[in-house]
Image (tube, rainbow, N blue to C red; front, side, top):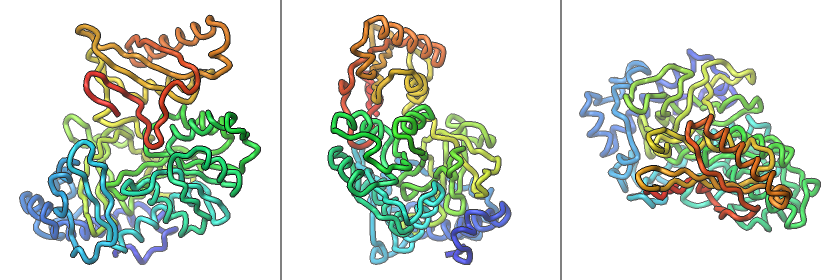
Length: 438
């Protein structure tokens, strides 16, 4: 594929002109592959794109209509396949819980390119072949576990494919094999800490240096809490199965935004209402085109994830632009009595409170004609068993700060540790009794 003239370390530090030239060449190759699919052949020809030569500049990508998850479902099972099935060596699929699954096919070359991205991402966080990598993400059709697994192996790390759940076993392996790096959801990291003492462990039993956290949006306050509880570095990451999975974007050791690997992904940010581009630095919906996959080319995919592009160079020397942490999704925004509220805004408030535990749940229901917002959160065992006045003061402070942040007066209920359910995979943080759970 175009770009193989560069070593991966060179790709990380290409100047902007060389990077954009590489993007254009790879975009042409991707359009060429897309025209071989039943789905894109019809769609692209409908807007006058009949060959890769109709893409002359990167701006020409805007001639291409957006692709949505509904489009991927419509194309199920083979409408987005651009090569003969004999060339496909793996597929991944969504769970299909809300309808027809979305399916992504990979050639061996596609998997090699994906693995290169995960190696790069791991290296950016300081990982080396001296590290022991315990992967606590689910394996299977979900890309979270297997995606980083292959990158860690190629980097030379000792890989423990623990998968998710079984907290007792996770602790045993962390201790016995002196794990230095874990990959987990932020909610599971918090759960681990809440069970550590109960299971007879302390931090001195482990050799943990870093956690790679992702698969669910989380606030800076949650990252800081994980770092403080475990005395480690925690690195944010971003990926989605439509764009392979883990390693679309990853933080480096500077922790000032996630490098979106632009030699592999063409990124746009758009206003979610008008669908027009927004300026760099402004919050918008991420739109991604994958440039390194032949089996299932996807053009201008509306991710529904909200973030901003950080245009300033990173002090680490990598030239791919960074994105901010994901603020939320366009479809997880709550409208409560006419006010737009993102769960991340609530998380930011409660997780910075001293004494707050590691689990919370947001509930919304109808009370008459009005919406009622209730925040359930656990508190530390010491605080919960202390006098009621301390709990009353904490509850009042949370209510006041939430009101200042989201302009809504929420009810707050404080619970003892272990009261709220724990999910082994992605955490369920919102129960909307008006109709949706996420």
